[in-house]
Image (cartoon, rainbow, N blue to C red; front, side):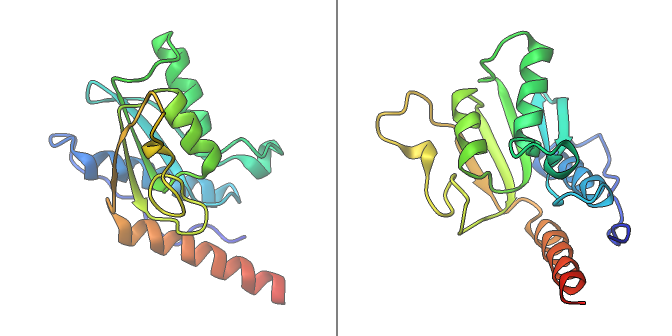
Length: 168
């Protein structure tokens, strides 16, 4: 797989808003591409500081659970010394799958921001809404569409190139 054609984005740290943190996740998706992984990146923020960050590593780790979100959640819990991450926000380039959505809810992450909706496997509003289960004891706030265009473009380009390689 050739190196990722998308450039990293370097926003000013003076304005640490949702776009700033999503840009950090997007940059990790570039790292994922360059590691021959599906380009998804995630960061977890506590008190306006990134405490963990990761990109997908399922192929290199031969581990189906090595999604960016799962790795970032584990790292954040270790950093804070607590599995409850209710004062944390997660930024991820694509809507979390069932596994990652479940981990997000179990970890009690306060807010989840993602770039690209996933109508096939997304479980925070795309295919289904695990965070809205009536009897769930935790319901994170969910925001979608943060930097949607670059998040969508990198995933589409990755899989288009992957399909071209398979057909040749």
